[in-house]
Image 1: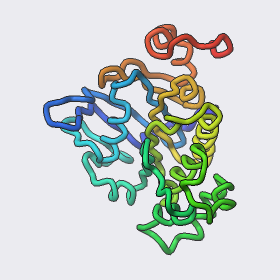
Image 2 (image 1 turned 120 degrees about the vertical axis):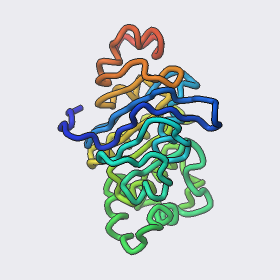
Image 3 (image 1 turned 135 degrees about the vertical axis):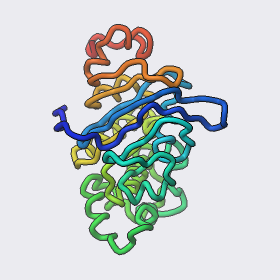
Length: 248
């Protein structure tokens, strides 16, 4: 994958200390950087704080110490709808579509702040995911798991964000549908949207990521280029398990 150009980070989390209940720390001095044009993956064992990290960045979990910066400006603990206005989209792990609504209605929900921009934004999203145009009238709950993730990403992209936060996008999907989701993430990145992705399928995540972070017990354990982490013996042994010979 081509490396994006450097420059001022688009999104930063610096020394984040956060958790759901005061006094119970989930993230302990955790830091990440996302540059324009990048796909960055966050992996690690269960309970490492991966999902808490993206929720803290998006204002869904209180940050007690540290700061979140968007284009160099503080946005720590900013309300989610304000972050959407500022250019951050978020796709939660579960319940990320309205199953009784059609695909079109789901996408319209993503554009509630700018409903008059429907045609332009729909054309942009449908250009990324043509299936959404084909299935516009179909109920979202009748779609496959991979297709529902496409709807969820599409809805988050309707406001044309600069940053897309993904929380475990392949969780609970069959392997074939997981691969669909990773291809969707690649398409989003190629469209110029920077992606910060928390993912349980660490191997595939690091394969498509420009850079990656390994979290453990709420702290940064390792970071580097995705390809380098895939072949780092310590990362493989401690966090990725045994990789196939073709991935070595």
